Length: 148
Length: 102
Image (tube, rainbow over all chains, first blue to last red; front, side, top):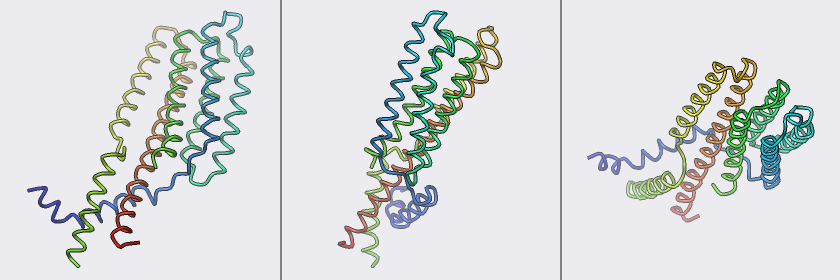
């Protein structure tokens, strides 16, 4: 019965669905895929993975914030470059917001490190958080390439 | 005119069904799963505070990091949905153009 009604009014259903889709996405616009951003994000992910991997091996003397200052400086420079590039592209507000949040996460990580050396449980939890963030950012970047 | 409308309607409905089944247009289950995951992580952080393994200040920063992760995930879902909708609309536009022979 329902199928018959759907079939009979299919033309109107299509129009209504289209209107709903258009109103929900306000004429969808997502920037095109950017291979440079993809590579830079992947590189930053690798640097962060190395930082956490190295951290699990570090002795008590080498676990302090000051010993890892180059990592914080490099990640700050990398994320800043990524943000400049992302902001320069039209219709890229979602990726820009993601990168701003990632930048905020690095600042939180630095603050946390300044409070003291990380325990192994903290390192695992922090790495899981950063890995999930990078996965989500790359998911969107790759959807721009393969989702279309 | 009515027959033409019906034929176009059938084609558009078919295209919509094909696109909706092949794209992740609606991701409410993923949003719910990610929100649930955040709640579990916040509970785990609170447990570490109670156990004395984290100070209040450290816990606050850990919670902020977890919130950032959730926001980044939600933005990814929004972007992927936008791309999927764009594809649905493109597909339907293609059907209309083909129907009218352009």
